[in-house]
Image 1 (cartoon, rainbow, N blue to C red):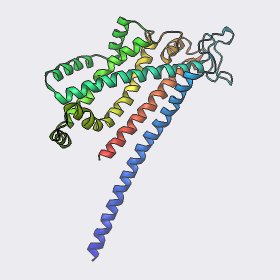
Image 2 (cartoon, rainbow, N blue to C red):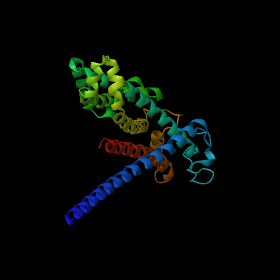
Image 3 (tube, rainbow, N blue to C red):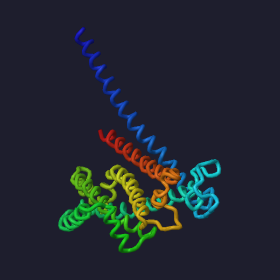
Length: 294
């Protein structure tokens, strides 16, 4: 009897430890997800506000208000042309967000289709596509983007096209690996026995099992797109004036780092927090997915 009681107590303690472990893991997952979601939601709201309205005209110059420090009238100060930095940051968030969303949409859609088809069918086409993929991955992404933009010229739409093409291989590689691991599962074999066609199996049976991984890839891709756009604009071959861009603002501000530090700090911190929010969101989604799979 004593042995039975002690055994029951030890099993109960073990279950409590397991529950505590899961609760700690859940709290950690929720912390990443909640923090990332909150920051991302704020930036989405700012992006929408920047598309509709800004406190001042982001391109209006005023020589009498150059380099004004942050105040109630200009909460982020003014730049070397007297333009309101907060208005330009809002417009820059909108511009960068639109470029990133469009870039990820192009790369994600085309890359997903290529990865799904090559991963499912395999063969010679798969080998050719993957060797091209490996060749592109052998060079830094920003270098390839610089080459493409240098050929087709700077500008908002050219940056979207260049980055969209650049993001196709990464999506294709990730989706392809998922399809290779899933195409021989029992549910796929059952679908074949029931007479389902290849296209139906690819997009109706296998694709739903890839969506969680794809969603994490999209959030990471959005981060990379934001940084790539900011880098190209910083170098002067991205979004062109008079359109506001966080990267070009940072480039213009570097000459006034000591005389007007707010000019560089505001767009710089915006980029950092922007990327941090989506990084936390991606990590939270990844951890939630792993917890569900366990």
